[in-house]
Length: 146
Ligand code: RB5
Image (cartoon, rainbow, N blue to C red; front, side, top):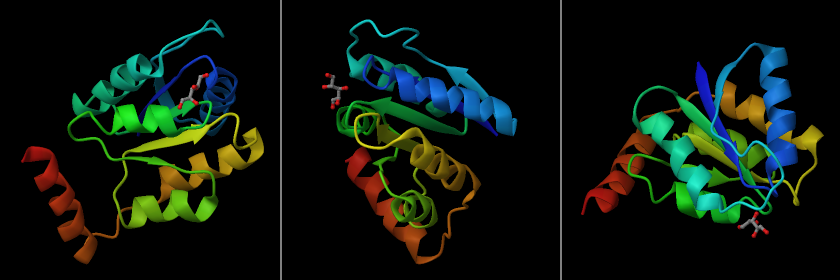
């Protein structure tokens, strides 16, 4: 599985930890920036990262900003993206099982790197349950296409 990652300046330190972690666990990734801590506008990195997914180049994405909220709001404006802002393990697991989330967003000012890596691992290894949840995801897509 190939992953797209991105962040603004506030999320940059956490993105760097994630980059290192993905390397260690052997997950291929594309880094869509930012590449240093200079002030950046998170919708730009959200768009660049999400387009790697909608183009088919990457299967899932991980985005970080200060809270995880702004960058998730921006990501969810990209057609075909289901981004979930998570700071706990249960949510990161169930957003895969029930929502088929394709982007995990986290706040570098909200959670520490240790917890974040556990969220990354469960997000990348949990499959969508389908069934009744597929119908609900389809209804989300209907709203997007209305
Ligand atoms: C940047 O200061 C901060 O606003 C941004 O990283 C994010 O938290 C927005 O939701």
